Length: 364
Image (cartoon, rainbow, N blue to C red):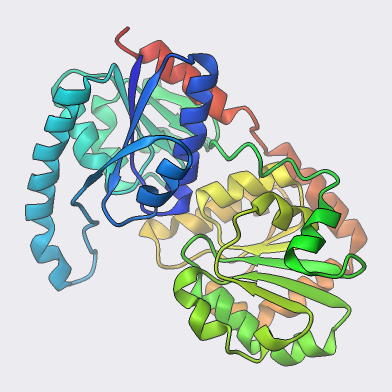
């Protein structure tokens, strides 16, 4: 079988794509897999590191606000469509899967035009524009949330959950190793702040402004992933220089970060939410307001409604986040209850289920 997996832009698209590829290979070891992503984006580094080939398209997203960047969008789209058709003609896939992100649009459109089966994997509770446009051409649409028939044809929807990296949930007994790697005290409670692969300015500002609070509560320690683009700025902050704070641009061993966490603070991207359900730790979500249709808030509310997480609005995070995190950290009963509830929402077999949908729809 020959498979193309298209999409990317952020870790929230790239890592699920790799999880799907691994799951397909586990079911059919003879599968030849090619990734298609956007040039100069995260996938061009992470996919080869995972052992897969990738082709890059000259494509970027359409800015919803007035921007000079939009002037080049039609040219990039036309170029990417031509390039996509060439990739399809050369590789001759039996099925094409789109995981979201602007790089998935051209290749899925071209595949549909050629009669190649197309599978869409929609991660969020609010469907992306590209996936909505391509839905009618899809053979199947794998989703992570109930009620997605308001975006997609009901007969094509399969509820699978979101695929996650298989290693991130394997955290049992890893706290000592985590303490060693991050140079943290095994006897202190730990708050882990995760801004995603690109970092999150609000979360970084919240840590920076919490300097006095963190200095006062030195019985608590903080592991802070700030994002590579923010690291040089925030490593100079007073908070970063505290003995109970560890700042990192990016955390490769997420399993160890989850293992050491007593409370996790994070954005509410689809991949993050799915991983946190498997990890079963108390969570405070701060949805990004800078996403289409405020879909991160909708992702977060799917947990909050089940008493599986707490939510702090982005505009309130700089003042309210750390007092709430400290309160939760010291409320054992609430922490225990939240851990149970979030675990009930986990779908650990999502990658395998999606792989089975791919194989069953391939032209083989």
